Structure formats: C-alpha cells, structure tokens
Length: 484
Image (cartoon, rainbow, N blue to C red; front, side, top):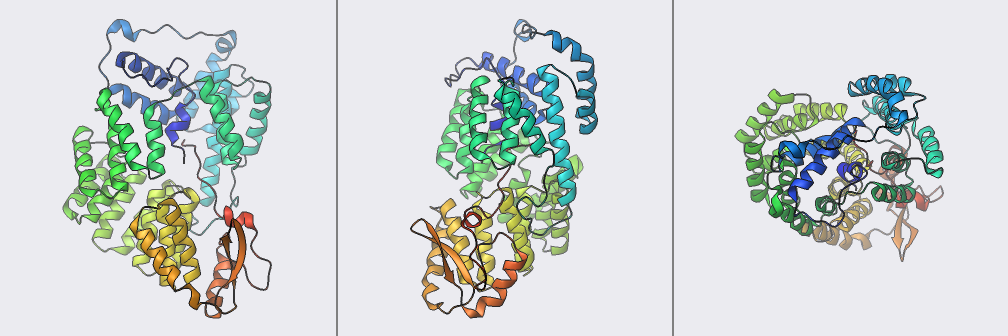
C-alpha cells in the first residue's frame, strides 16, 4: 500500500537529485522548503506539512540562502491570479464546490489543477456523508464518488494531449487508483515521478513497513538518522511504529516517550502509542495520554481511539464502542479504529458486529494481516473451520514469519478431514485454480446466512452457481492512495 506521502510528494520537486546523495543538507533544506510552498499552493496540505517538518529538523539557513529566485510567471498565471487567490481561500476553508465554481474556465496549470482537485474532495466528502452512519459491510462500489469518472475523462484527454504537468499526472493517477484501474495508475504515477522526481530513501522504508519487512525499513530510517535527520519527528515516529509492528514493545515505548518530550503536542501515531500502553497495562500513563490529547484536540480521530483504549483498559465496553464509532464518524476509512472495534466486539461476544468491523478494516487496507487474522478468530468462535482456515491462510500469506499465523494455520488444517458431508459449497484455490469444496451440513444455516448478509465472502450455496473467481481473488475493495 502506498503511503500518502509517497504519492503526493512524488511530483513536487523538479530540482531534486535522484541519486540519494545526502551530503549537502543545506541544499536538501532549500529543496524541502520549495516543496512545502509548491504543495501549499495546490492544496496538498499533508505534503506541505510533511516537508516543513523535515526542513525544520535541519540546520537554519543564512539569509542569503533563504531568497530563492522567483518562480516563472506566465501570461495565463497573471490572468488567473485574482480568481486563483479567491478560490484558494475557499479551498482552504473546505468550500470545495465554491472553489471549483470560480476556477471553471481558468487556463493556467496551477489554477486548472486546483479546479480539478477541488472537485475530487468534494465528491469524497459527499460519499463519506452517505456511508458515515453505516457500520455494516459495504459492497464494492456500493457508494461511489460520482465525480471520479467525469474527472478521469477530462484528465485523460489532457494526458493524451501531453498537457498535464507532474501535478496533473499525480491527480490522474489518484483517480485511476480510486477506480481500481491499478495498472494504469502505476504507469501514470511512474510518469509523474519522472516529470517531477523525488526519490527519498524513507519512502521505500515506509513501504517496507507496510509489507512487514521491518528490518529493511529500520535500516533505511537509521541511514537517515545518521546523515543528520535525527530531529525529524516523522522519522522517529515511523521507527517507533516499525518496532510496534514486530512487537518489540519496550523499544517502541522508549522511542514514543522520547518523541513526546520532543513534540508534546503531536497527535499523529499516538493511537499506536496508546496500544502499547494498553498491552503493558500502564493504565495511569494511558489515562494521562487520553486527557492530554483531549485537551489538545478532542475531535481528532487519534484522540478518540486513545480514549477508546483507555475505557477498554477500564472494561467499560459501551464507552469503548462509543468512542471508536465517533472516530469512524470523523474518518470512516481509519484503520486504527476499525481494528480495535473488532477486537472489542469479540470481547463482548458480539461476533456479527466483529465480522462487520474486520471486514471494514479489510476494505480500508486488505494488506493488513490483523483483520484477516481477526476474522479467522471470529469464525473459530463460530466453529466454522473452512471459513477460519481461509482467513488464517490469508493472514499467513501477509505475515509468513509470524508464529501465531503458523500455529493457527496448522491447528485448523489438522481438523479438516473430519468435515466431509455435502452441504454449502466453498471455493478454495488448488494448483492456481479456484475449485468448489463442500461445507458440512451442520454449518449450512450459518453459511447461508453469511452468504446473504455479507456480500463478497468466498461462499456460494450448493443450489446456485459457484462464486465467480473474480470475487474470490478480489473480494474486498482496495485501499485509496489518496489522503486529503
């Protein structure tokens, strides 16, 4: 899964070197400051924030070095300046439709990008408004951003005419990715990075972390620490997350504690920190963190998750569910809320709600092994061996060296020969092909219920045709690379 930074920054800096040379930190800082400005002009706020944080971690520049040459201004830029300034103000206060209305007809590349980009988050917001109250499993494509196809057609015409700059190519790639046209999206993203290259080592480190290649990720991050980026709160936080992912709890806690001293008002990744405090039963520290974040910003998604973890440590299950649901109302695609909500429903023995939560987690990021493993545990409670084996196998594929996955997979595989009577058909993969096997009759009512109520599950009734292979291979919607 691509990081929100990997894709957004890839098209920003036309002067950056691609050789991985970190010897001139002053030049790197100038480039980062340039990136921050270019991103801010186009409404890419996370990109601007990220680059500004990295620039802050480097030594201060002299006055003469802080006066870069002014960017070239075209005749089209001059003509669109007034309307761009007005529309950008509307965009900044999230009046996206209003911004797009005033930008319609602009010809400069910067104004045109903002025109197209304003319509994208407008459609995303409307889509989220339709799904925010639904905690049930969503069918793939059930709720759509209606602007996606229209934007794609417009940008594709520009692309064919070789008109878009790196920013336009980036947005075109995002739209293709949201439409599940992954191969085409990759081609466009690669083209965008060639037009405006930025190849920093820790982008690769972030992908290593996502793929659970933690040793490789830590090596990349350590290289950046060694060359002078040791004060970067972003890099330090990612190192802590990496240690969290390999369950080196003491090391991760130590790094998070140092990060809190360095940046006490930071909220990003604090939900991960609260997970560690919860595991260690450090209730007083977890209580302090929850109260502190509540004072900083009580309506941030991470704050709601931290408070949810605090109430979970106090075994107040109803309040736990309340705060995780609040987090999901703020961001329905926040993985850090769906996962603990699934765990909490399991604690409450509400397996139906747990299945829904884990399914939502997979819809957000199907590469996260925890959701697949959680579904396996849920079906183990329901005594449905074929289902749990399927989900444990998926978890093992994503986390092949985790002993928990191996033990679960081995134990559940051992009991399968005893289930041989004919009942509900269940697709499984053999020699690269999907075939249909049978579930025992004792499982037929539950399996039929799930087939009706949880679309996308790899199950078909024996009275009907087998589930199409396309549904088995891609039963869940994929994770967006875009972050507003």
